[in-house]
Length: 102
Image (cartoon, rainbow, N blue to C red):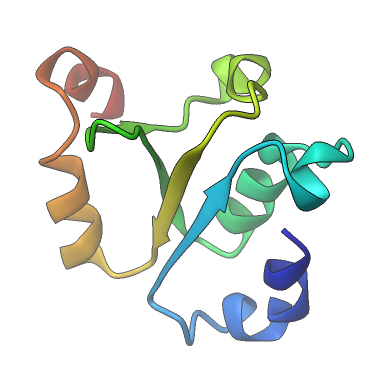
């Protein structure tokens, strides 16, 4: 998340329409940085974020599950402010989670 903090003004102005970053136990994540804090920041900037498993499926971030996301294993997070991209990403969410997104 240090890179995301470094481009805070770009994110705040939503100049980067889509951002993807890795989440794992190395670097800042391994020193206790919380994924939930990063996702909360992205939400403040009006990004919609999805967790991507190494199997390729997506899950939206649910605030009530914040503690469960701190597992520090390899995965990617993709966030977007572009409505067309968010719609396309929502289509990759498994059907049983789609009701939660709506």
